[in-house]
Length: 303
Image (cartoon, one colour):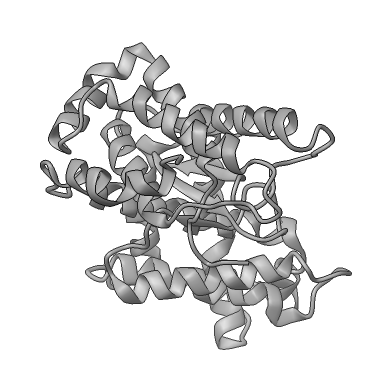
């Protein structure tokens, strides 16, 4: 499994069609395209080129994937929508359309899209689902955060979680699950270096996630990260009882994939919303159009 966001051309064909078809955010997208040296008709043109490349490569023995730069461009465009509404519904619609096409063109019996086709749009940043842990997690973003340490730590968590999907039998050996506590907490603290305490760092991240999430998803993350997460993390880190929670009980709360899911959902959300903010604020006037014309288009040209 590759720790990257290399994806099938089919992903972009379906993604750009969906973006072009949604008229109520067209002004924001058109302005974004113009700032990147592109133009409104570019969406349809790009979708056609990705579609043609997909058709050419659909039955290849090894799936043809295009590099992460394509995902970064898509995420840079989508970042125009980061404060408009949550991306949850768009992400599901995109996944459904990709799977429908994959079944029609390659495997009618496919239960889900394979790696390279299975994506998630989190905070309007495109990501690739890695490994077999879950259909939604873990996810590699189009690019990692600008803070190299945070990026490396998150990539390590993705790699660890992807391998957890291969572990059979529950409960897991204790450290397999509890390691997500200290890695998640470490990333949270690193993303909020001005906060003195872990609880303060988490508070800022949870508060910042509210505009990006449906209410039910925000409540899930808030209740976990500002509830038992901190206590459990302190207990397994310092190996001592805290507020009546023993090491045995805390480690038992991370014994299988469902137990650690809220931790992974939270840290994925925090990292992706950071990447989305960085892309939204990236000064890229005309640069993406140049990169498309001089490099990216050649990845999907059909000769």
